[in-house]
Image (cartoon, rainbow, N blue to C red; front, side, top):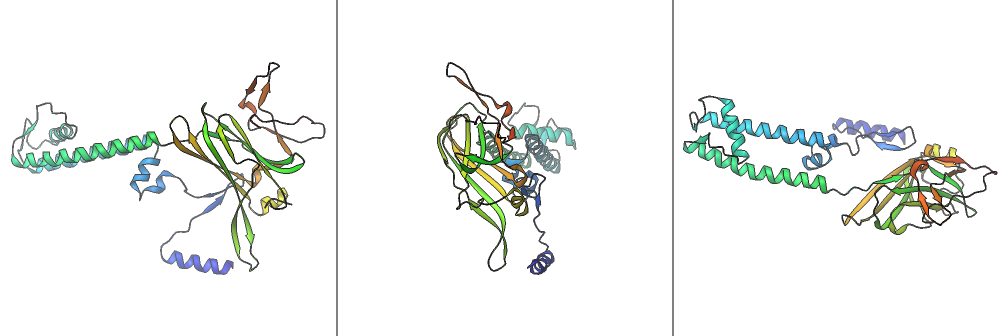
Length: 317
């Protein structure tokens, strides 16, 4: 099998197709090299402008603006003495006349005086309309892009819950609003070998005690019972590492503030799945019945000890 893969890789390399590296991280997660990186979209300008950091977006727009004005300045210079108030052969004056034309400023100091200059001004005015429309659209798309501020616990744990071994992890909404009709999906990735001896990285869907919430506002702990039908049944920590297991969590819902569908995704590598641990409680209860959610220990876990009889009861469960 490995020989066939090597031969196929050689054939692909002969066609100048570079293989995509899927690297294993320190926490056990697998990450496609360059996945989601803004510089990987250099062949797709629209996605590049949406994913590049703001400093890069401003830099690209500014650079394109200067280059465009320099181009029109050269076109004006090619027309000879075609502008009023401009020193003959002065690139500086022609450049700033282009800036005024492209921005529809029109101070009145510079102006066209030949048919050639009027034609270039007309072309630049049309270009200005297109450029402003494109940059405005890109800026609005960047500002209006819905982003969910969901915090996932650093660790997932496997421990007894109501007498059943259960996979657990928790999430918190960092905004003080609600994600309506929140829906949760959990997938398990692991190496498997078919009966025919073929190697594959298989995806399983894990069953949850509750995979929907009418309003996710503060905290949500997910529970996946490890029954005989679960792909985690009978697994040990060593098995998870050996099979390169990875849990991928996908949360989606309607943000009530902006009325947009938001999504959040998180992955747990095998090293971040702890057996026989419990989450430290993040809910404090007062005598009058009030409860307080404190994120200070949101990511903290501790080993389960027979001396620890008090159970964690996350808010909302």
